[in-house]
Image (cartoon, rainbow, N blue to C red; front, side, top):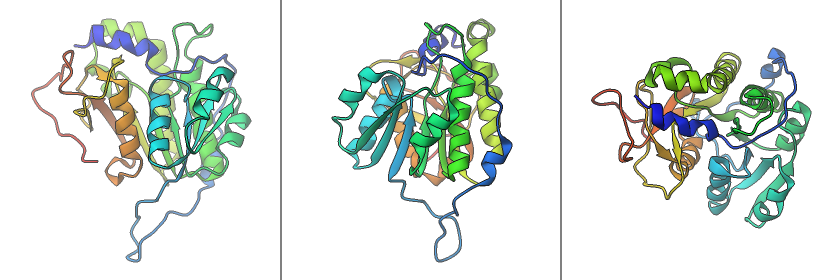
Length: 273
């Protein structure tokens, strides 16, 4: 099991934001842009050129912004702290919006004009009110995407949510239960209400700081668990954006080369990106 590894997940996602209440507006997901189709009529990969990233100030979200910028993408980096603005805006193609992810209209206004939305929002240990951003912040991103017709959404949660509950020990689950349940609620909302679009849920486990190994993978196997560098998670997110093999799938992110890796089983199949 991954008891020690999952301790890292307390700081897995990067935003620490004050809380407010929110109820998902189901009607928000009825407004969509048309799916891009090929001459043969099947859904084709869109060229996602302007990408909204929530939780962009540091951690996984920050690395995602850097990678997208290096690829020539236009990025709207949504951050809570104003001090992140100046540094991020030095990156080519990056526009920084400072705002509170718990205010839905603020998120919607920031996302307007984007064709892809990524949210790496999550609880930090210093949050005064625990775990609300794990649900409400993420739900606000999802609802904004639905209202604006953004058809590509990538939600970053954690191994231990939903179908991956048994991948972690009971001790780790109890320690992280509040955050995991909040993230799981966001996952369920995305899967239930975003049926006509290309969503992906990516679940890493214990996040480490270090250079990318290049060995990390995504898998539909719900029993795997292990440590993974933030840089590798960011790389998987960026590669997944245009990969139809990740569309409408819930995937675990793991690194078989990590010293703390624990499969929980003998073998698994990686998703081809």
